[in-house]
Length: 329
Image (tube, rainbow, N blue to C red):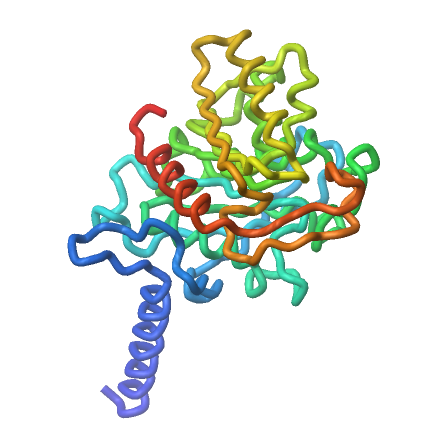
């Protein structure tokens, strides 16, 4: 073999090894007994460490979204090492993770490199449990990459119906990917994304025949008022809803009323509600509690309280892990 070729092969091997090592850094380290960490690591991995791939869901797939842009940008993360050491024979389960009203990104940009800390941390945590994760961006392709939090509900053109259409399109895209189990699609959303979860699991709305079913769903501190106002609202999938008892942005009492209404109409429904006393909006994060102004939809006329709660965060992740691990939620 020529010296130049041998040198080239060595360079390729070194680069491949470096990429594998970088991806391995994103995997949580089990403890001495092989148990997975209870919560995401203190430092969220970078997009490069996670191996994030940017994908485009074409408008042709989004046939039930009248406002659809040419493509829907999304970020695809497949686990590097599954708990069993190999992918299940039926394929990987998939979590469709749905951003809140601030969008997917930090203020530094609008691509995979600046995905928010929450989303990168959850992708790592879910990947350690064997889930592939896809994060569709409902705002960027519509010209609002950094969110709609300051828009009044009534004035929003990116509403629940639009986000539901994005979710349905994403589910069809997921079902077409190799190596995944389309029977195990989980919806997981936060705040505005959690409202989109409620919209999608509403059994009173028609379900497209070519779209796989939701296996289970999780909604962190959604606004429940819109669903509560629907006289025929029922569930088409098991739902875990996690709310903060002191949430003054999306109050928990409306979600309690929604659960009561759904179970009265649909006694067999699996609708679990966990309310964490003393916790505010965003309790599953680590940011300090603070007031945020300029929010027209909160309970306090433009000011809301947001921030993490260590006890609620720990309890929420324990509940989420149990919900995901249960064979039949």
